[in-house]
Length: 139
Ligand code: ATP
Image (cartoon, rainbow, N blue to C red; front, side):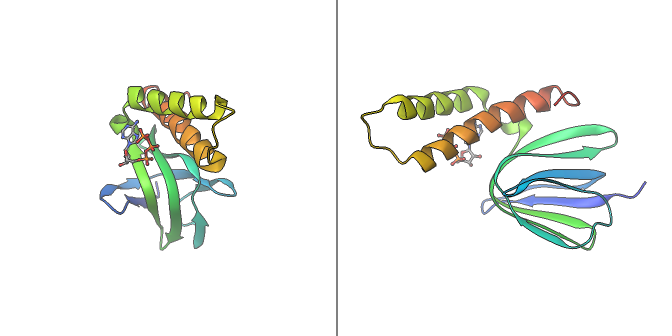
């Protein structure tokens, strides 16, 4: 079966480089899917969970910001932050979620709501990514 190369890098590290069957990623305009031999494509990334299929299994990676580029049968994800499901600390994400919810609830406090919404979304997506990663196939 035809495959495509998936590379995920951040400013700090190479997160993964794998031959895969399919990539689904959170573009800022919505989810998009890439099969082998896709036409060239470029999209900015939002906050969410990328997944890829390999040998009949699904794998999940949290990504936040950056770009996805498809060319020459290769998907390059240049993400600001990327965490494989196996790397995510759920307790840390739950604490981040609580902090964001508390900030949003403190009506008197002047906060940057856009920044807080992004922090909340990162925490929720990380929790979701971890649970998908542990229960692949049901997400
Ligand atoms: P926190 O408030 O917990 O730092 P955050 O959403 O502000 O969360 P980011 O700015 O997205 O964090 O990421 C900063 C760094 O921390 C990145 O290297 C990221 O991989 C890591 N990181 C953040 N949250 C987690 C988590 N729950 N598990 C593992 N690594 C995390």
